[in-house]
Image 1 (cartoon, one colour):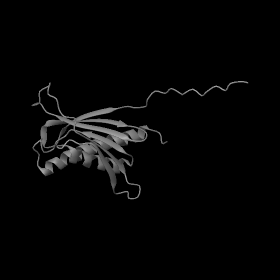
Image 2 (cartoon, helix red, strand yellow; image 1 turned 30 degrees about the horizontal axis):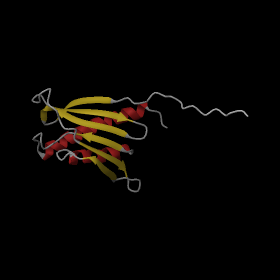
Image 3 (cartoon, one colour; image 1 turned 90 degrees about the horizontal axis):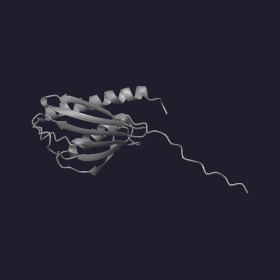
Image 4 (tube, rainbow, N blue to C red; image 1 turned 135 degrees about the vertical axis):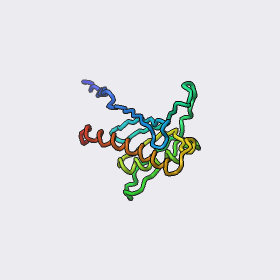
Length: 152
C-alpha cells in the first residue's frame, strides 16, 4: 500500500512594508508627530506618537491606548470600535482616529496612540488641525498603497 505524502506548507516571505512618517504638528511648532503604518491585505495597523526637543532622550513615554475599529457593514457612515488597551490621556484621541480611518479605509484598523492633545497644551481648534493633518498624511499613504497594490 502506497502511503500518500502529506502536503507540505508553502513558505512565503511576509509582504509587510512598514512606512514611517514624521512631520511637525500645526500650531505646535516644537512638536513632531511620528506615524508608523502597516497596510496588510485584510487590515491596517497605525501607531502614533509625538516628540519635542524639551523631552530628554532617555525619558520613557507610556505606550498609550490601543483601539480596534471596523466599518459597519449595515451603515457605511458608522464604525464599530473596541478598546483593547486604555490609557486615560489618549483614549479619546485614539478612538476618534481609529473610527475615522476604519470608515475611510473600509477595512478594519488597529490604532495605537500615545498622543495626549491636552498635554500638548493645545486649544480645541489647534487640536483639530493636528488631527486633520495626521489623517490627511495617513490617507495620502493609503492612496499610494492602493495604487501600488494589485486588486485581490
